[in-house]
Image 1 (cartoon, one colour):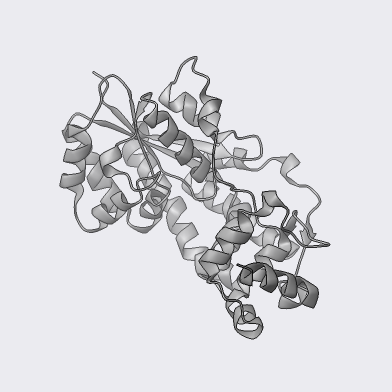
Image 2: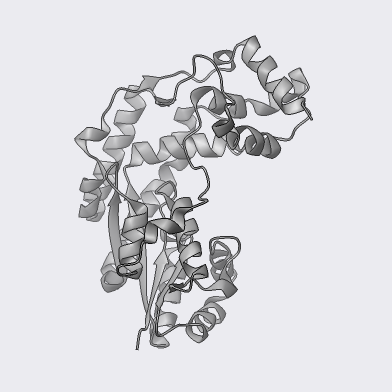
Length: 315
């Protein structure tokens, strides 16, 4: 009997969106069991809400009832990484309930080097209007989560070592190949399941600045488009030629000193909690020329902003 259920658990910013699209496409082709009854969109984010509401038994029962003995069984949500750091006891209780039903839960967790992770998270959250603080202030707001996450990993390794796979995520990581190996798709041409995958490329510098200050720009320059609509229209139109002059792709708003502080935090926390796998998250080849940019609305010229306004307001 195949009693293993994989929980692809993040971290965020480790190729999860592409991975979830890939798993969803394979499930639609009948190759794996991706638990459609528990899925919204291409992922299973709401299962964490169920656990937080105390629905451990209900969720464990639904996973058991819908287990497919003839296929790989997998769910995916990076929100589980928040439980690892935020409320480890909930995940532990859920794990024990799955075991009681004869299910072998496997938490597949991809680890990203901390400074790279926070830099990427800062950009993502700020462009959606969820962060409007400086990079250093953002780092301070994430320190407790970071410490709790590493401590949570340690506790899971102590209590459920047979239920955890920790995979370093770095420039060499191919998330699709890694997931394909986890669900054991055999000799299938699994790359074909990436056709139509969403654009997950990093925003360029000027796009990032535009959406960091979007509410202010929109009010001053009379953009007739919401932030979400603007992101969809501009970001997904880049293949059609929308862009700025003198833009940058390889940049960071975290200065050298801040990056060094965060990198050392990651090294210290991994050592403190016995997360040896973290050492492989950082490669020397990851250190490449990068433009350190101080975040400012003045990065966008008047011409840039007029270009955006005309594009967004055009019918």
